Length: 232
Image (cartoon, rainbow, N blue to C red; front, side, top):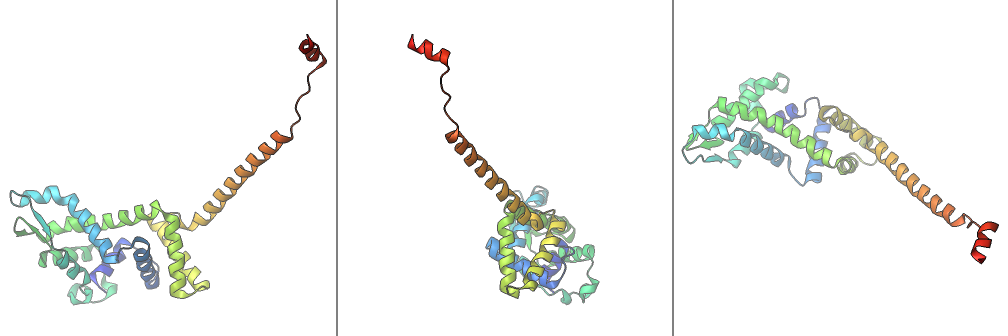
Protein backbone atom coordinates (compact mmCIF):
# COMPACT_ATOMS: atom_id res chain seq x y z
CA UNK A 1 0.00 0.00 0.00
CA UNK A 2 1.28 3.44 -0.95
CA UNK A 3 0.96 6.65 1.03
CA UNK A 4 -1.59 7.75 -1.58
CA UNK A 5 -3.76 4.68 -0.94
CA UNK A 6 -3.48 5.17 2.81
CA UNK A 7 -4.47 8.81 2.44
CA UNK A 8 -7.46 7.75 0.34
CA UNK A 9 -8.55 5.31 3.04
CA UNK A 10 -8.89 8.34 5.33
CA UNK A 11 -10.52 10.66 2.80
CA UNK A 12 -12.95 7.86 1.83
CA UNK A 13 -13.26 6.33 5.28
CA UNK A 14 -15.39 3.20 5.30
CA UNK A 15 -15.27 2.38 1.59
CA UNK A 16 -16.63 -1.19 1.45
CA UNK A 17 -13.94 -3.14 -0.40
CA UNK A 18 -10.73 -2.84 -2.38
CA UNK A 19 -12.82 -3.50 -5.49
CA UNK A 20 -14.97 -0.47 -4.65
CA UNK A 21 -11.86 1.66 -4.21
CA UNK A 22 -10.38 0.51 -7.54
CA UNK A 23 -13.72 1.14 -9.25
CA UNK A 24 -13.92 4.65 -7.78
CA UNK A 25 -10.47 5.55 -9.12
CA UNK A 26 -11.38 4.33 -12.60
CA UNK A 27 -14.68 6.22 -12.58
CA UNK A 28 -12.99 9.44 -11.48
CA UNK A 29 -10.34 9.20 -14.18
CA UNK A 30 -12.91 8.59 -16.94
CA UNK A 31 -15.43 11.11 -15.65
CA UNK A 32 -13.12 14.02 -14.72
CA UNK A 33 -10.33 13.25 -17.20
CA UNK A 34 -7.99 13.50 -14.22
CA UNK A 35 -5.75 10.89 -12.62
CA UNK A 36 -6.08 9.96 -8.97
CA UNK A 37 -2.69 11.55 -8.29
CA UNK A 38 -3.76 14.81 -9.95
CA UNK A 39 -6.87 14.84 -7.79
CA UNK A 40 -4.69 14.87 -4.67
CA UNK A 41 -2.21 17.32 -6.14
CA UNK A 42 -5.06 19.79 -6.69
CA UNK A 43 -6.30 19.18 -3.15
CA UNK A 44 -2.79 19.76 -1.77
CA UNK A 45 -2.51 23.05 -3.65
CA UNK A 46 -5.83 24.22 -2.19
CA UNK A 47 -4.67 23.24 1.30
CA UNK A 48 -1.43 25.13 0.71
CA UNK A 49 -3.32 28.23 -0.41
CA UNK A 50 -5.23 28.16 2.85
CA UNK A 51 -1.98 28.15 4.83
CA UNK A 52 -0.13 30.56 2.54
CA UNK A 53 -0.77 33.76 4.61
CA UNK A 54 0.73 32.09 7.68
CA UNK A 55 3.62 30.45 5.83
CA UNK A 56 4.66 33.67 4.13
CA UNK A 57 5.48 35.16 7.53
CA UNK A 58 8.24 32.60 7.98
CA UNK A 59 9.76 33.08 4.55
CA UNK A 60 11.82 35.78 2.99
CA UNK A 61 10.53 39.25 2.20
CA UNK A 62 9.53 38.22 -1.30
CA UNK A 63 7.17 35.61 0.19
CA UNK A 64 8.04 33.00 -2.44
CA UNK A 65 6.71 29.51 -1.66
CA UNK A 66 7.87 26.75 -3.95
CA UNK A 67 5.99 23.45 -4.23
CA UNK A 68 8.09 20.65 -5.67
CA UNK A 69 5.49 18.57 -7.49
CA UNK A 70 7.84 15.67 -8.21
CA UNK A 71 8.92 15.36 -4.57
CA UNK A 72 5.29 15.41 -3.47
CA UNK A 73 4.47 12.61 -5.91
CA UNK A 74 7.51 10.69 -4.67
CA UNK A 75 6.09 10.76 -1.14
CA UNK A 76 2.60 9.77 -2.25
CA UNK A 77 3.96 6.86 -4.30
CA UNK A 78 6.14 5.64 -1.45
CA UNK A 79 5.26 2.22 -0.07
CA UNK A 80 3.80 2.46 3.40
CA UNK A 81 5.58 -0.73 4.41
CA UNK A 82 8.89 1.11 4.05
CA UNK A 83 8.12 2.97 7.29
CA UNK A 84 8.47 0.87 10.47
CA UNK A 85 5.41 2.48 12.07
CA UNK A 86 3.09 1.04 9.43
CA UNK A 87 4.52 -2.29 8.32
CA UNK A 88 1.00 -3.70 7.87
CA UNK A 89 -2.31 -2.16 6.87
CA UNK A 90 -3.96 -3.29 10.13
CA UNK A 91 -1.69 -0.97 12.06
CA UNK A 92 -2.91 2.07 10.13
CA UNK A 93 -4.44 4.67 12.43
CA UNK A 94 -5.58 7.90 10.84
CA UNK A 95 -3.96 10.38 13.23
CA UNK A 96 -0.69 8.46 13.35
CA UNK A 97 -0.58 8.18 9.57
CA UNK A 98 -1.16 11.91 9.05
CA UNK A 99 1.70 12.68 11.43
CA UNK A 100 3.94 10.29 9.50
CA UNK A 101 2.84 11.85 6.20
CA UNK A 102 3.77 15.29 7.53
CA UNK A 103 7.19 13.91 8.55
CA UNK A 104 7.77 12.47 5.09
CA UNK A 105 6.78 15.71 3.39
CA UNK A 106 9.27 17.57 5.57
CA UNK A 107 12.01 14.99 5.04
CA UNK A 108 11.60 15.24 1.26
CA UNK A 109 11.46 19.07 1.39
CA UNK A 110 8.28 19.25 -0.65
CA UNK A 111 7.87 22.95 0.22
CA UNK A 112 10.59 25.57 0.18
CA UNK A 113 9.70 28.90 1.81
CA UNK A 114 12.19 31.67 1.28
CA UNK A 115 14.95 29.11 0.89
CA UNK A 116 13.98 27.22 4.05
CA UNK A 117 12.28 23.85 4.46
CA UNK A 118 9.04 23.69 6.44
CA UNK A 119 9.05 21.70 9.69
CA UNK A 120 6.86 18.64 10.32
CA UNK A 121 4.62 20.72 12.57
CA UNK A 122 4.13 23.16 9.74
CA UNK A 123 3.15 20.36 7.39
CA UNK A 124 0.68 18.95 9.93
CA UNK A 125 -1.78 21.80 9.33
CA UNK A 126 -1.48 21.41 5.57
CA UNK A 127 -2.11 17.68 5.80
CA UNK A 128 -5.25 18.22 7.86
CA UNK A 129 -6.52 20.72 5.30
CA UNK A 130 -5.53 18.32 2.51
CA UNK A 131 -7.98 15.72 3.82
CA UNK A 132 -10.68 18.36 4.17
CA UNK A 133 -10.22 19.79 0.68
CA UNK A 134 -10.01 16.37 -0.94
CA UNK A 135 -13.41 15.50 0.55
CA UNK A 136 -14.97 18.84 -0.39
CA UNK A 137 -13.52 18.72 -3.90
CA UNK A 138 -15.03 15.28 -4.51
CA UNK A 139 -18.40 16.13 -2.96
CA UNK A 140 -18.90 19.35 -4.90
CA UNK A 141 -17.79 17.80 -8.19
CA UNK A 142 -20.31 14.95 -7.93
CA UNK A 143 -23.10 17.19 -6.65
CA UNK A 144 -22.64 19.46 -9.65
CA UNK A 145 -23.45 16.63 -12.08
CA UNK A 146 -24.54 13.53 -10.23
CA UNK A 147 -26.38 12.04 -13.21
CA UNK A 148 -23.33 11.92 -15.46
CA UNK A 149 -21.21 10.56 -12.59
CA UNK A 150 -23.74 7.79 -12.01
CA UNK A 151 -23.83 6.91 -15.70
CA UNK A 152 -20.03 6.72 -15.77
CA UNK A 153 -20.09 4.56 -12.63
CA UNK A 154 -22.52 2.12 -14.22
CA UNK A 155 -20.62 2.02 -17.51
CA UNK A 156 -17.27 1.48 -15.78
CA UNK A 157 -18.71 -1.25 -13.56
CA UNK A 158 -19.98 -3.06 -16.66
CA UNK A 159 -16.58 -2.72 -18.34
CA UNK A 160 -14.87 -4.19 -15.29
CA UNK A 161 -17.36 -6.88 -14.27
CA UNK A 162 -19.51 -7.41 -17.37
CA UNK A 163 -23.17 -6.61 -17.95
CA UNK A 164 -24.43 -8.80 -15.14
CA UNK A 165 -25.65 -8.78 -11.56
CA UNK A 166 -22.12 -8.39 -10.19
CA UNK A 167 -21.64 -5.10 -12.07
CA UNK A 168 -24.96 -3.74 -10.83
CA UNK A 169 -24.16 -4.89 -7.31
CA UNK A 170 -20.74 -3.21 -7.32
CA UNK A 171 -22.22 0.03 -8.66
CA UNK A 172 -25.04 0.08 -6.09
CA UNK A 173 -22.63 -0.71 -3.25
CA UNK A 174 -20.37 2.21 -4.18
CA UNK A 175 -23.36 4.52 -4.70
CA UNK A 176 -24.73 3.71 -1.25
CA UNK A 177 -21.35 4.37 0.38
CA UNK A 178 -20.87 7.71 -1.39
CA UNK A 179 -24.41 8.80 -0.53
CA UNK A 180 -23.77 8.26 3.17
CA UNK A 181 -20.16 9.42 3.32
CA UNK A 182 -20.55 12.54 1.17
CA UNK A 183 -24.23 13.35 1.66
CA UNK A 184 -25.15 12.62 -1.96
CA UNK A 185 -28.30 11.20 -3.59
CA UNK A 186 -26.85 8.90 -6.25
CA UNK A 187 -29.04 5.97 -5.19
CA UNK A 188 -32.20 8.05 -5.73
CA UNK A 189 -31.31 9.75 -9.01
CA UNK A 190 -33.12 7.15 -11.13
CA UNK A 191 -36.32 7.61 -9.12
CA UNK A 192 -36.06 11.40 -9.24
CA UNK A 193 -35.37 11.37 -12.98
CA UNK A 194 -38.39 9.10 -13.56
CA UNK A 195 -40.63 11.31 -11.43
CA UNK A 196 -39.44 14.45 -13.22
CA UNK A 197 -40.06 12.81 -16.56
CA UNK A 198 -43.57 11.80 -15.49
CA UNK A 199 -44.31 15.36 -14.34
CA UNK A 200 -43.02 16.87 -17.58
CA UNK A 201 -45.05 14.42 -19.67
CA UNK A 202 -48.13 15.18 -17.55
CA UNK A 203 -47.75 18.92 -18.08
CA UNK A 204 -47.36 18.46 -21.83
CA UNK A 205 -50.47 16.26 -21.93
CA UNK A 206 -52.42 18.85 -19.93
CA UNK A 207 -51.37 21.59 -22.35
CA UNK A 208 -52.48 19.48 -25.35
CA UNK A 209 -55.83 18.78 -23.68
CA UNK A 210 -56.43 22.51 -23.08
CA UNK A 211 -55.66 23.31 -26.71
CA UNK A 212 -58.01 20.55 -27.89
CA UNK A 213 -60.85 21.75 -25.65
CA UNK A 214 -60.33 25.31 -26.84
CA UNK A 215 -60.75 24.19 -30.46
CA UNK A 216 -63.84 22.07 -29.72
CA UNK A 217 -65.64 24.65 -27.58
CA UNK A 218 -68.61 26.01 -29.64
CA UNK A 219 -68.87 29.70 -30.45
CA UNK A 220 -71.71 31.29 -28.47
CA UNK A 221 -74.68 32.35 -30.66
CA UNK A 222 -75.99 35.90 -30.19
CA UNK A 223 -79.22 36.20 -28.17
CA UNK A 224 -82.47 37.57 -29.67
CA UNK A 225 -81.96 40.83 -27.81
CA UNK A 226 -78.48 41.16 -29.15
CA UNK A 227 -79.75 40.35 -32.65
CA UNK A 228 -82.39 43.13 -32.52
CA UNK A 229 -79.73 45.60 -31.32
CA UNK A 230 -77.46 44.61 -34.17
CA UNK A 231 -80.29 45.13 -36.69
CA UNK A 232 -80.90 48.64 -35.39
